[in-house]
Amino acid sequence: MDRGRPRASARQRRLGQNFLADPNLLDAIVREADLRPDDVALEVGGGAGALTERLAPAVSKVWVVEMDVRLQEDLSSLAQRLGNVEVVWGDAVRADLEGLDPAPTTMVSNLPYSVATPVLLRTIAELPSVRSWFVMVQREIAERLRAGPGTREYGSPSVLAQLACEVELERTVDPAVFTPRPRVESALVRMVRTGPGAHPGLRELVRESFGHRRKALARSLELARPGRIEAVRRALSGLGIPEDARAEALEPSQFAALWEALERDGAATAQEGRE
Image 1 (cartoon, one colour):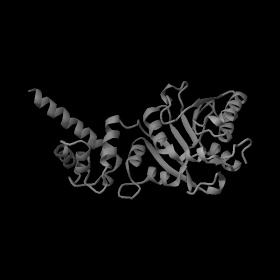
Image 2: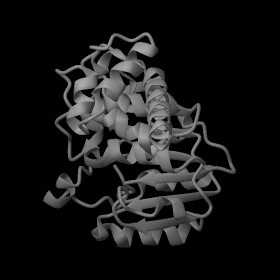
Image 3: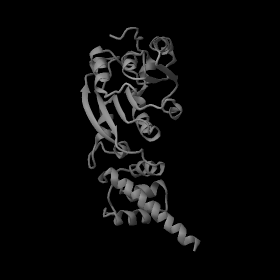
Image 4: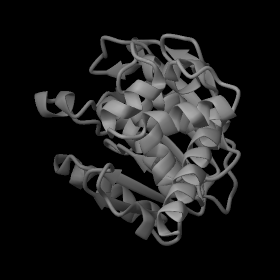
């Protein structure tokens, strides 16, 4: 069991905090995270520092983001003892991650379930310095991140993650290794960056495309922002995609191509209006 791990409270449960209680698994996470001595690690959801304590000797620096200030005594004491750990107190969805200096090169975390998806997508988009992720998430989230077109799990997180990364589910994790014990299975996910995060316009397009899953993609985009259904249909046709295709039928690369086609169409229309 973690030394000094606090008893779980109702607030911690609301925050999605489930502390890892298996030292062998904690050791395995650090061992399998493909860390380098010069890495700067980002850990979101440090808890009482069980993973932090193992990460610190393996890298040059650890940034820990934690919002539960009742853990301040544990983490602050640990950071002072280790010397290469710095704690950022706040919500990782809103914290100034881009301002971290030195910039993180890898992310290793037991992520709070409630913020796992937005935090992962944010770090992909806003932290180009991060080359890899090795994180514990709810298994359902892991399945979504690695899902392929045509599956029930495939959605905007799948597309946005896979546009920039290779995603692998490394292993499932029994609820018994956590305290409090979650009601769902967890999984360790590895992501390796293959390219930059999606442009903000492309991210918006992807999210709007999945806004109405039972409707055709063109109709879903029209409902989000009226007046572009014909442009979307032209772009789809030009890419060899059926005009009535649903969002879940498109590969991540096809979303990128669709956004680029719509950008060209918009630029051409604007040019015609000036002539």
